[in-house]
Image (cartoon, rainbow, N blue to C red; front, top):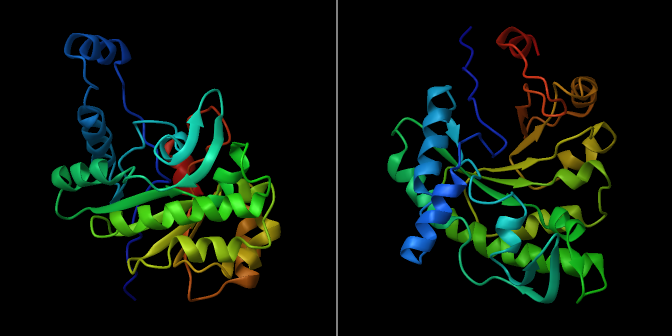
Length: 256
């Protein structure tokens, strides 16, 4: 029996060295923002060298939430992002980085586009405008929908990252995700870290093609998915633990 080899991928971020002093010196000497392309190229090279087949941009430019809130209208980034005016899409947030990755990516590798989920964004900001979590979440969903539409032609899959699902799954989660991916035709993935064993049936109902979870850190997920699994979904099996500081050995990761 021929068994198809699984595709190795990442959640999103990937280690790369950023020489912040050099970047600051470059800014003050040239009075323009320095290029992040060398850092992105480094992250991509490391992923390819590690055997990753579905590669991201490494999320090197900014923390994975503030890269979006910094780019959306209505948001002001301080210690935490504050929503000070209605949230709106202004211009593509990740498109230029993804286009660069595509230009340097080997032809046999695929590209993963990343967006942070609207629920996670709504839970992570200080809201000074909406005073309603659902309304705020749908405002983010609309901005993310436009981002997803623009990056789709460049990528092979779009992943929506919703880490806050482990803390609470909103009744309108399905509607939010459906709105974000409503106008894209490429494969879609939903990543939710943490222990999501209690919400697996709800996750399986989400309008995405792939579900990505931390199976190594939450081995109980194997049993729950075995009980409820829907063959219309694919599973991205998280095999490297992110809930501890210790770096696992290759043998440990393989044993997962």
